[in-house]
Structure formats: structure tokens, C-alpha cells
Image (cartoon, rainbow, N blue to C red; front, side, top):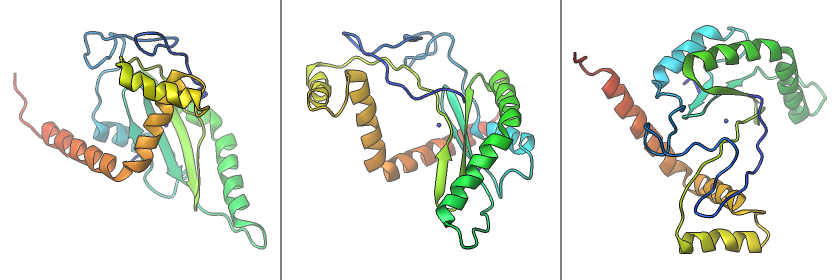
Length: 207
């Protein structure tokens, strides 16, 4: 299966009535909170095929792991394991990932630029080697939501307890917690959505 570019993951401040950060995009014609400048939907299989043809054959040991959302495409590939010899295996794997990141930077940027022009999404890269996995950089995207008092109190409790520094950071923390504990369910949901997408792609053309 083909499987979060140069952006740091930084918290963004919240505002009364919702959470808004720099570059906030409100509810626009795209619906579901998508702004008018949001990238259009893409077929996952088309994106996977493009990257399969675009990436050099000697970068990874097999197909890449590809994650696609409305803002970003994350590409994580598996590297061949080095011969550690008497050295520490984990350190050798981390070194292999670091070497890949340095030696392929210019090529990866060129691929990312081409993908962004084609799909309207930023590209983030990562690599795995054995049990060591690293995603180099991820896009941090402001998300606006409206919460009633009970939900706001949950966030404020996390802030008051020192778990988070702001409501927006508390919301991000809560999302990560849900992802951690509902990983199997989310995986099933994504698989179901992918099946629907495949069926839709095979449907008859009208017009």
C-alpha cells in the first residue's frame, strides 16, 4: 500500500466562540468547514499510483505508506536495514534514516513541489528502518470549531491542570488521545471509506 514538508508542529491560539489561528479558513462553498481555497478531493489510488511512478526505485524496499487528507500528503518509506556489526542496532537504523533524509533532500523537495502543483497539498516525508520510524516534518493546520460550555469546561480543565497551555493545545491533545485509544475503530472506518471510494470510482460515467 502506498502511504503527516517543511513545517513545524506548533500550537496556535484559540478565540472566543471557537479556535482560530493564522490562516484560518471558515466555512465556505466546499462545506464541512472547508474554505473556498481548500484543495479538491483526490482519489487515493491515483495519488498512490503517481508516487509509485515518481519515486526512485532504490529509495525504499517496497511500496510507501501513504496518508492523504485535505491539506497534506504524508509519504513514509521503509529503508533497508544496515549491517550494525558490533554496533548498536537501533543507532544504526537511526543513522540510516538520517543519511536518507540528508542525501535525498533536494530530490524530495522536487517531488513535493510537483505533487503540490498536481494535488494542491503539501507533502511531508518520513522513513522507517526496522523498529525505528521517523516522520521528518508535518504541516500544522488551524482548525475552527464551536464548542458549548460542557466541552469548553473539559478543555479548560486540561489547561488549569497544566496538561495543555491553551484551549487549542488541549483540543489537539484530546484528538491524539482519541486516536491512540480508538486506533482499531478508526482503521476500520478508513477501510470502509476506501471501499466506498473504490466502488464510486468503478461506477458508470454520466453525462
